[in-house]
Length: 394
Image (cartoon, rainbow, N blue to C red; front, side, top):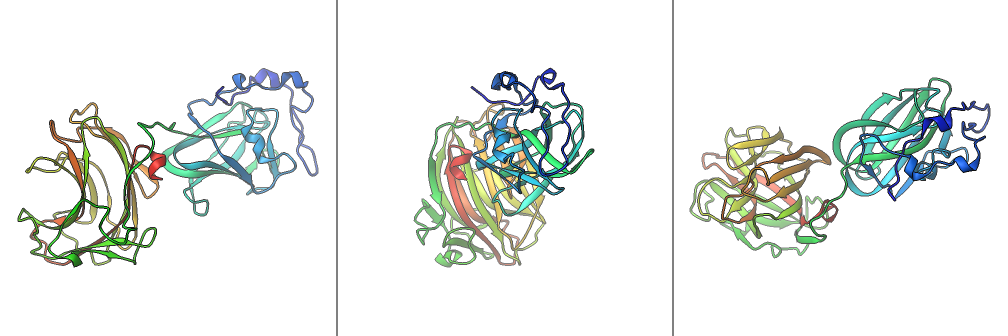
């Protein structure tokens, strides 16, 4: 049975009193055990609760942090002192968009707090600062912009009565996992020490697609892509050196792709197109149906050669992490794209045609640019993986 978070408030009409000393008195301590809250009496308003695999806290008074996950509002986590925190591990990187918190004695006092998220348990980003209503012991949901996170932390900043942090139940809110079938489909992370994971290359010389041991985003190897004016290995428009992977996406396929790209510190600034990732169609002419490119000082994601669905300032000299979720379809009401960038969900699901009717797609990675650009361009790629679910590529 699904566990949720709302206490029938009439059950807790009796007010508790905060004790002086080493622990906080519960407003439910005098209730008969037969009135213990069941899972069916709880709910998380405006929240799809994510199951935490574990929970830790900065301390406790004997009421441990695990009590916030037992679906019982008669138990709680408590710790004295502003700055006290409780931290939930979601088990893997998930899409998180809020928190649902049932505050102990929440109908008697307001609580000031901050919500933070982290991908690695070391670097935390504050995403919400607020105050509980002080009007209910039921769960209240606090929403923020959706982002990828492995951990969610609640940091207590004091309440209207004392400095006791005390939470009965808490859940991260987000997107329930869906999958079209589990499993990693392909890796192109260069950990073979070569380009052998890729189907083919389009390069004028092997030094243009060079497997290197530094810099890397993960593991031992990455690829350094160099393009000089005049590099035209396939005698087509523009200049390029690209890796090709025959991913052969067809109508109705749905995949997640993860990779990291770094633009060299001297990457040219040109007011024209410079593609670094594209899904090309099986036809021989026309703009690719999906392309990531740089123009001037901005990175863009464009569909069908004309529709820009996302952009962000170009950053040089740093690894930029992408997770790209695509439903491949020539139908604009079926196909969609969704993008995580540097750990945050920056493009919620956006519907649009992601391929051309009657064709398939395949992946090209490297650098492909307008032939008018004269300076040498260098870009690095690493950590490519294709999977059927977000968990697969994380």
